[in-house]
Length: 211
Image (cartoon, rainbow, N blue to C red; front, side):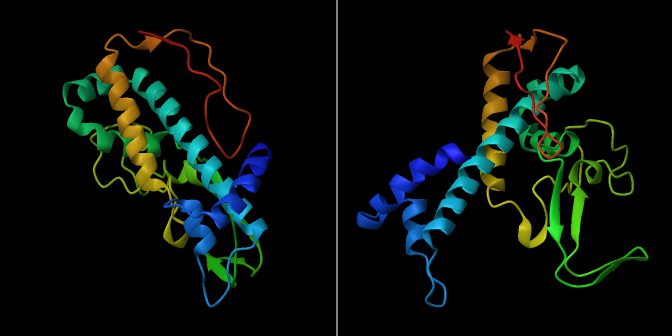
């Protein structure tokens, strides 16, 4: 993320001088009750939008392709009926979530299932576990691209719902759909896979395949 800062540091004054029809120009012009984003706030926002919108979608596609290859019956079902792709992407998001956990700070005292959580406490939520909750998902450890009522929280929930969710869904559908359509012989090239060292983001270092 730090390596992106010089790029945006150069781009921000350029867009201040000559605005364009792009997101950065709109962020610079945005105003609420007379206040505008500071230079530091602009840099943080640009880094967040750029990095968060890249790595999580890469993990969705990588994890998703691996999951499909490991479930040949579901893969065959999807190849035979590409209209199932939107639902398949939702199930991939639930089954092997690109973001496994996140944190929230309570802004008031909360009592949850008899346990009191004081205002100002840091609460770590396990998104991956919630998406396999048997109280919410029937047979949660089964990968099913035709699963109905798939209300997963891979993109968060409420006011913190992921800003880029529609784009991530579209990118996942396009990338996975193109791979399956153009490479009918797609298969894993190795049985040994390396995962990134992270307790928050779940993604492969690489996914060797042959076609």
